[in-house]
Length: 191
Image (cartoon, rainbow, N blue to C red; front, top):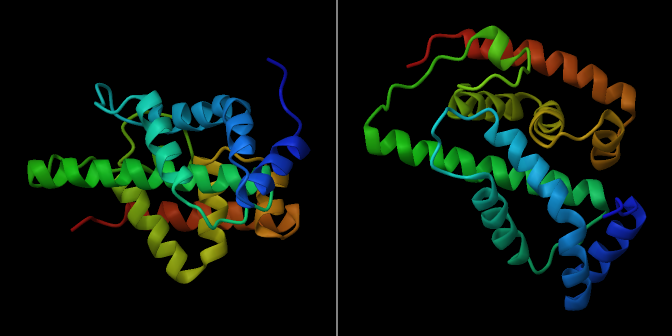
């Protein structure tokens, strides 16, 4: 299936926002592969034997997105940014529940190379990274969004700039500073 144009996806998103259910039915097959790619990216960072499967993550995110009736989608990049954020929330909630059930669950310390180096190695403690991103958001919300969009959402510098309505140079500067900040935060001893 040929890749749909960003303009076509944006047009369908706006139509769906306006209540056009037929637009949603046309949109789903156009965005499914990209949603699956984002989910694979997330799941690739999870531990071996994770009980949540990629398709289940896509389906859960889809069910939550469809319930958002009053969202005014700006464009394709906005949709995928929200989708990536939704998947992050699902996985973090899943990890927190699992940790709670195991009462500490042998939390893995995240090394400098795993977290701030933004590698795709498995075993990164998603809860620790989420906590660090939340702390970064308290200090600088935009830098936190840049990490979320680029690292988790897989958006390009240009797409991230479009979503945040800043220049590509600002995104690159925020990206570099955020990685350094996260490295420092993740190296702190955990309580």
